[in-house]
Length: 67
Image 1 (tube, rainbow, N blue to C red):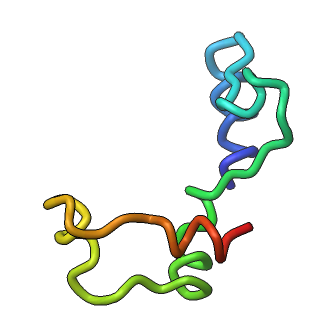
Image 2: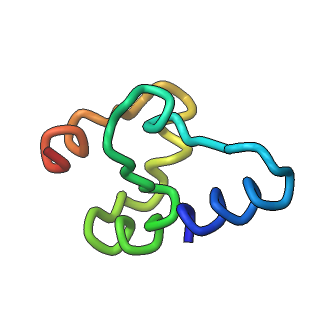
């Protein structure tokens, strides 16, 4: 969906719209478009987001598992 949206919006405004990966010359990895899938594959414990906002949790586990 994300790549199609970039193409669609580019056609509407008649200018190329790019994502950060395009800008950096990297392969596109549109994780936001696959958010539901990733939450199923790598669920976070209940209350994790709130703990993260308070500085009581980090993303280390997800960085290792995701590589």
